[in-house]
Image 1 (spheres, rainbow, N blue to C red):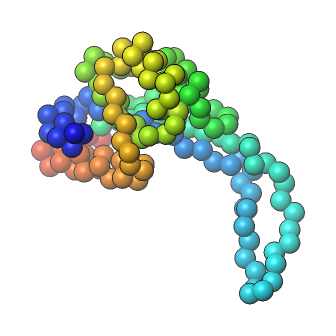
Image 2: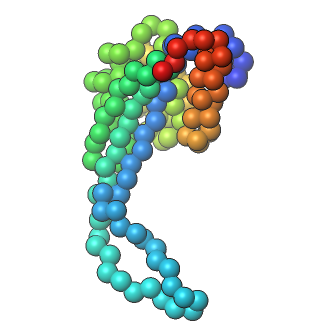
Image 3: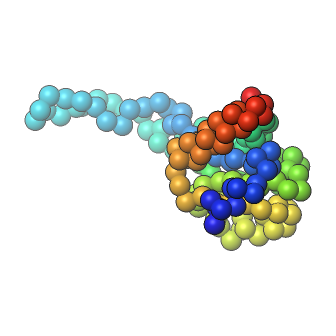
Length: 149
């Protein structure tokens, strides 16, 4: 279905959304040792101190980034939609996102309808595959001499 829709979509209407995070402690959880030897070292307990970023990007480079502490949940995602993303969306925009649980919850689906986000596509692919598709679309537009920088 999505692959068939791609043929009729105006690429300027695509809004790609993704999120990422990093352990703020930058602590290695594993070490290397000689065979049959054990690594013994102190590791500070910073497992839940995460810094995360969520952003959208359009083919023209426009972005709506947000940096936050912790991991993404439905409440935080809906807050991002309401306060940051929705004001930037146009009528024909298509929100493209992966199938992260925060994107697929009932709470999120209800908010998407209430905010009037007309179309949203949840791809069941990992972010690397989404990035490859985005690059393919960009390459096709570049070949047509449409500025995507």
